[in-house]
Image (cartoon, rainbow, N blue to C red; front, side):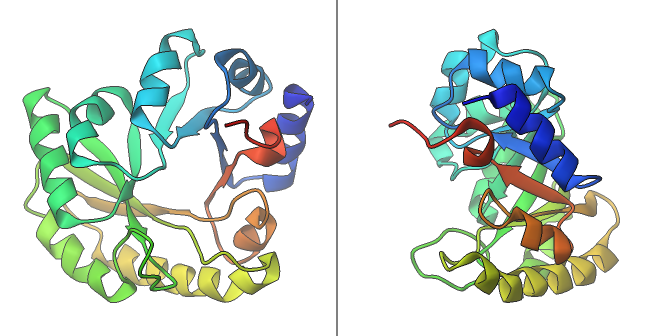
Length: 216
């Protein structure tokens, strides 16, 4: 799979939208090809996997995009510039304590369960404003965006969910002050990133369109 060429192609297609290259199961050599092609952010789903390979990856910004368990918070705060998958107030309070311990202000996005799916992680859309109110008291957290994974439906059917996310994003930007600075809307993956951009995404997360089908 020509990673360098694929990365160049995707970067051209996303234009001014920020690209996160999702590198789950991808070895460092191929990740470095994407970085050499112009990728500046990589996203990992699992803390342990990134810990095992991060020393072999070229300098870049790093995002955790997968579910974060409480027992992995210490390593996640040490390793990642941004944690996109904040799905509860309990989790964010634990992150705040760890960040305080090491003198860091952890950048985070709040994950929204935009389809209200019981099997998925994330805040319900109507919980976000309350969550932001609670987070204002935390000094080692900076909320910079919202993130979602829409229901698994044909790409065109994701459009309505992305529109709901954009409306929520626009509403929550009005809450910006103190440690709340919502300016990123992370939505859209390999199969639907073009639709997400059309509906207002400022960041897309693309893996298989760059690296090919994952090998487990």
